Amino acid sequence: KLWADWGALFELEKKHNKDVYEATSGFVIEKEFGKTSLTMNAFLVYEWGQDIQNEWESEFRAQYRYRYRSAFQPSIEVYVGEDFVGIGPG
Image 1 (cartoon, rainbow, N blue to C red):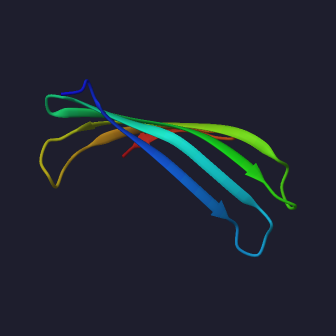
Image 2 (cartoon, rainbow, N blue to C red; image 1 turned 120 degrees about the vertical axis):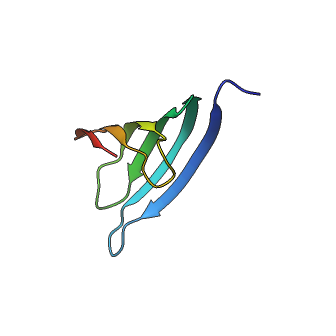
């Protein structure tokens, strides 16, 4: 019925043995094009605590996948965050 499948993600983390917290919220979108699909995730992250500088970050991830068979679905992925950019096979 809709143009794409949509979802939301909410996450709260605390680092073990450190006063570091992280709250993440974001959305997930997946669109199918015949035997291929495109999945995109965008997140807004806030970090705080005594052992870390309070700051906002953003992250983006995307995956383009070819659904050849259930056991073989080659894909390419892109990751973009505060200190990294990555691209490669999925």
